[in-house]
Length: 178
Image (tube, rainbow, N blue to C red; front, side, top):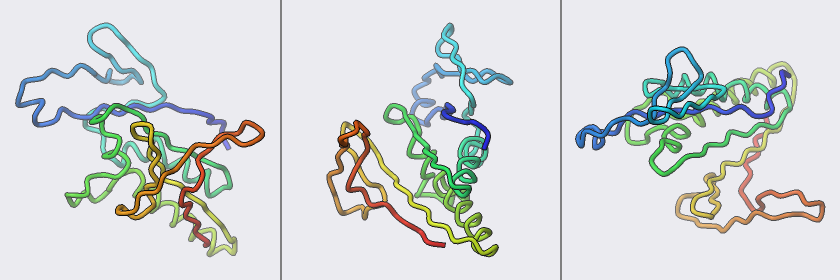
């Protein structure tokens, strides 16, 4: 496995119709040909990957998440962590738009498709695999298990064990035996 401890990607969403209607100006710009974002007129930030407003879900997935799916099938742990203020596009990037016929969905949909495809390849070659996934949201200091049914609310808590390791508990891990 190529060493890839932490990589940081940024996706700049397009202006929303209401923002365009009120003639708001974009304050974040992607510099063409560079992995940099310009904030305002004078603050420049570097990232491992940068996606502008015209990037597709598949563009983001293939460059940022798809390599991690292969690592999972090869037996490594992987995490995709999305961070940003409300309205910045995290839910759209992860899940796509549920009110349209977006053929790609979000990066989670694409990852699951590839994961099952790769697991099927392993199974057809005689390998048994077990994959455990968690899909957790932290919002306003509360953890939510996104694999739980929408009408069920279960409090999740971050705990520290006797060795100082932290993690969430009581989430609904989904295990898939292939």
